[in-house]
Length: 463
Image 1: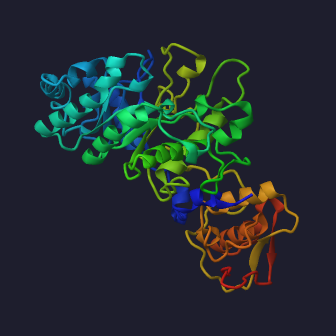
Image 2: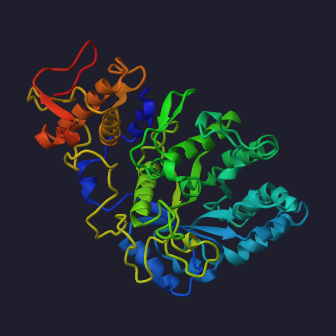
Image 3: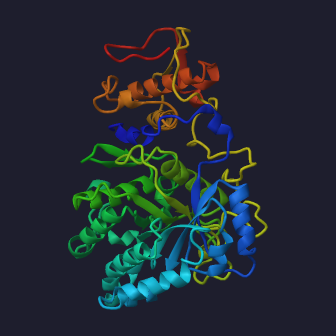
């Protein structure tokens, strides 16, 4: 099996050792309030600003109590218009005046004291069966952008969150992705041009939770799995979120807009669901959200977008006990109403844990960012006969911390293109980054320390 899965692990390089002991990377969160037991917005704003690494908040409306609560905090806010407001804003003759009136009433009184950076034109409009609403979306976005400029709120960008069903049905292979017929020709070229012109992100709500099956649970939760191979790009995807993000990117690129930024408006995993549902619980929610933070906030990016960071909003800040629908809808929360974590995601500033690395080997959790020559004349290589799945997991883990570009296609150590060789290179780089300690070559018993230099030709193993 080709090993170019590594591309999705390489772009971020390695995190400095000190980061392993600090709270998690900055991230955004959705703040819904469909509940009868939540703290006051001012208390929420103070908690987020002073006690967490959450630096962005997305609201589902423009409630003045919520907007004003974040005044004077460093947290940036995304504010939403209701879907029902869009047709009036789209009108050619009166839409701009309507947009200016809405902004004067709902944003101008609070900006710049509150750092509003995004204005969301409705939510998942393309799910609607109302043709008039769909046709109103892009004109309304244009009027809002014009109105913001006219009112002097030039720091506020306009976008709209899309559900993943904007993609045409496919086999799940990212390179085959396109937008749905009709949207692909008539809506998204113009909308993506709007995003390019205004510097606003194309926002999507990728939810592996709504796409997984019991047999794809590990794929959805960033757990070890055999992955899905994309023959066109020669990439093997072991993360459903990576595949979904790269599918969106591919569809955009096919229209000539691969340069437009992508933002994640919502994604999360519930801690409770219907009795007997497989794959829902505290550990599953933690595994998914940790994986998403690694992909979106660390600078690791995805296989087709290496080195990228994505403006991302986890779903959701609290459980919402008044939401209708399945049990899971009421249990996506990260924090309890008393601000204690539902589970430890490393978001508290005074917490000692951080976003965990991929489940993997046993070596030291605090590697140096880059392997430094130790001069010890020792190397770590994969044991002969080690299980292929274990070796692939070792590659996934090690390359999350060290530079594995040499085993990408075209790299000095790409050939021979097999698991044994690629794993040995990655494991050795990780071993050297940890000061060549024996435990850093354990890899659950699949690594072995050797005094025989495994370098060959132009492929040099650091020592």
